[in-house]
Length: 348
Ligand code: SAM
View 1 (spheres, protein in one colour):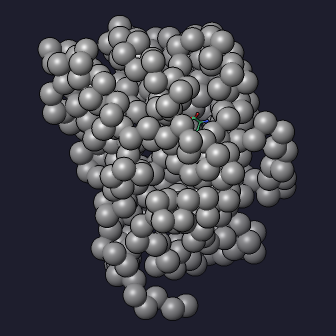
View 2: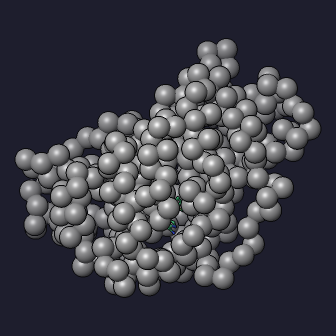
């Protein structure tokens, strides 16, 4: 194996990439399937999903996350596709929550199936969740996602009742689609004590690239909100790429995730594991490393850790969304959404 260029240091149980970034966060996609079809994410008639024989089993996932934990990773976010369509997800959550070293287990979901599962997920050890919600208008929700709004609202209320906190709403801000709803969404989050994060559209996959026409620079969104709310600088504990403001005299924090207008690659602390066992080293690049063949050939625990170290050594410096939009052809549903992180704030 060639480790030239990497500063990865296993003896101290930490993963450091060639650009001196400490990797401490794994985003774990437990399925590439989704029960919604957001027009900017997954094409309406897309059917080319990973075959079940290629899905990592819960035991395989547990092994990989265990190896990451031995290498100093403390945070895992379960994502998808839509993670709640994977059968028995609370069973997996429970296994992951018990891995020594994993101290932050979270979930990103569209909340369509959350009402029935929120309590079981909370009991299993999920501490906090991010919910994608681009609109509060039922008809608009259907035209953006192909699904129904009410189950999502029910899921959010069930999550609140089950003690999951914080609950963060992720809203992709899109010109001509939902740019008349930012103020409403702030009021909704104030009412329910949710955190709100706006996301810029990213040119990932043919759908994301096509949606670039709706791109909104979030500086504009912040200015728009500043006309209605008294915004003061804010910090969100947890580590992530959003930059936050707070609505004065309230608990509401509003984050801005700006992969395009202000990228945050220099503080990226994460990698992504897809359902078929591929490690993606950057959301906006094609660098990857296949772990499934190694797992199924019976690799030892030490061998698995060495493979992870080798993978981290090819983590690229930054994404190329601005210079080469559309060059990442996979859909976000394969790896889960948003990007990298700094240490003040958090993202899904
Ligand atoms: N199904 C889960 C959910 O809804 O959170 C997890 C996966 S979903 C791909 C994760 C996030 O990626 C969602 O918030 C979604 O809105 C966002 N997303 C998908 N495609 C995007 C794009 N082209 N630009 C910006 N955000 C995107």
